[in-house]
Length: 189
View 1 (tube, rainbow, N blue to C red):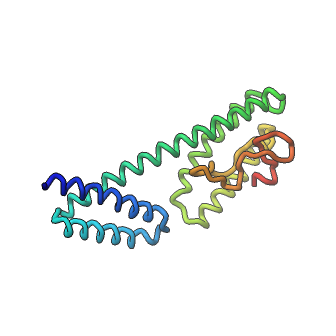
View 2: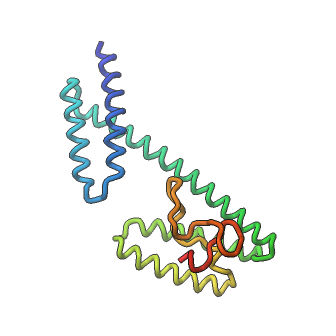
View 3: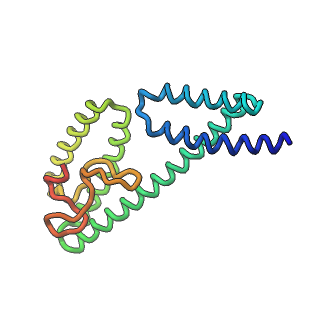
């Protein structure tokens, strides 16, 4: 009987935890403490209702949260890989069409990898500081592209779309030059 009760509580915690954690991921950072209090309260309520230790219930919540985070990271990595593969296909087509050299494509790919590192650094900045830092990097990218004789339309500016969403800035789409997948310089910035 105790095993059935434990399994039931585990299932209940998973279902309730999914909702609580899902809600938590959509809240703003300043609401994080309130969310923790809500989850802590839920953990206590479940533990009390089913006569379990709060530590056991919290362990189930923590395990579930960790698994979800890992799943989300795998999905994010898959999406990024798909976007990068499409981007590289478009660059290869530009080489084939004589619009870029292979050396330019190699330089673009290297520069995009460098920019991903900057994007990771920007995560922890305040919105205003992030905006200023990004503007600085965009200006540096423009200067670099000019030095390399690479039209800005072949560069992605901004983070890749997240969770299937399009950022609207720097996304690859048909425009202007009748080349699918590339923005004009004005749109990219």
